[in-house]
Length: 82
Image 1 (tube, one colour):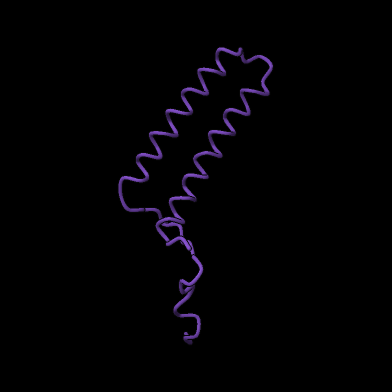
Image 2 (cartoon, one colour; image 1 turned 120 degrees about the vertical axis):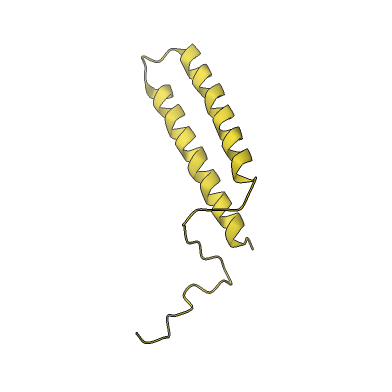
């Protein structure tokens, strides 16, 4: 069962990889894009993802994304009257 930090890290990694995949798909489906440009884009995306993954594993998560993992209290104040 992943903790909040692990869940946040996984979310960021998936988001990063999805963005790279989208950029590559656009180039692949553009008939005007030469194969050499696609190869260059693939190499650049691989370097970008590797660098970003190194950055995300270097320290604690600073994102404001709220991730509720199994077993964590989702709302400590839900039973309190306002």
